[in-house]
Length: 397
Image (cartoon, rainbow, N blue to C red; front, top):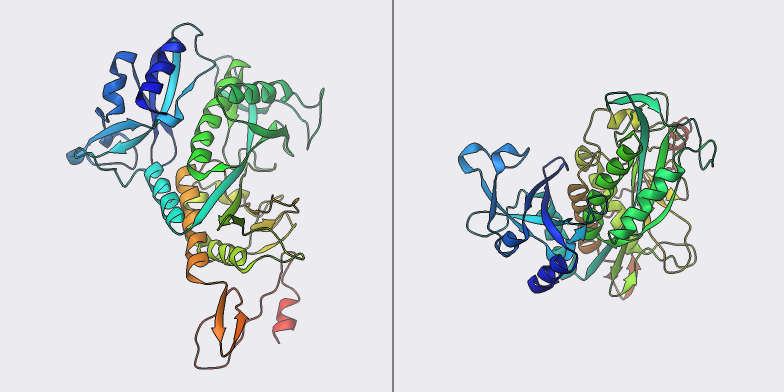
């Protein structure tokens, strides 16, 4: 969308306020509101703010940053007044010299997307977000009383979140974000909404819109929405399952042949497994994130499998054209821009640096996931020990 198209959009939709939105290091949404008369100045990257007051940005001696809205992200906020409407655009952050502020998580994700593109890789991400709905007290503050006592995929009258989810999905649709499905989850008052695949940057932008919408609609019902990883000690936690497909040369590397994954797909999984300890600091940023892991279907070990929902990485059964991997450890407290950027970076490293085949003598030999030069003749065997390790010692002996 060009600048003129943005100006036309604002005029045609009677927009009187434009929110310039961005996120701090922890994924908390921030914004500055401007009038339409200031839109040209904003689109040129001339609206400044005090970055020292934003968590994870700058210190007070280098506090000046500027916002430059991304025209492709403009959307109306349906819950705001229908006359004198409010629109919102996601922004990039610039230094005073006009260059991108490299500490901004949206820019970090954009850089990874561009890196992947130059390497011939295209990433598509589909998210599954879980959240709880709690009752509010008379002052409007959250309680720990869930909205209902329903269970997995229950319906009315047990599932009291049905109308809330419907309004969330319809509101998102008005914003150009298409949910794929929604249902009640395992926990009392727990819900899940899943989304169609999108490019990594758009998927992260959509995630921020989604969380804002959920909180807004819940508040209209006198409820409070919680994305905390483990809001109730003895119930299932909230997860953010990241479904990832990667195209290389126009081919989805997760499409199976005769029930087998391609080596590119195996390398992508290996890259994520190899870096999961470090990137979990960003995928699971809260102390309660680690109370969730290992409980119910949340993974506890670094492993992968076909189908098994207790694994860190799962390869779901899929129809032709829908091959993907599912990373099940992240939770919705994470910053989606950082989370997606780190997952992309880990997958890219192995796909690019470990080719699918090598020349050996006069033949082409397929490599395993891990292969390193050693002076001794050594091989390693891995076991799927998802249900306990009692037998592993016997095998190793």
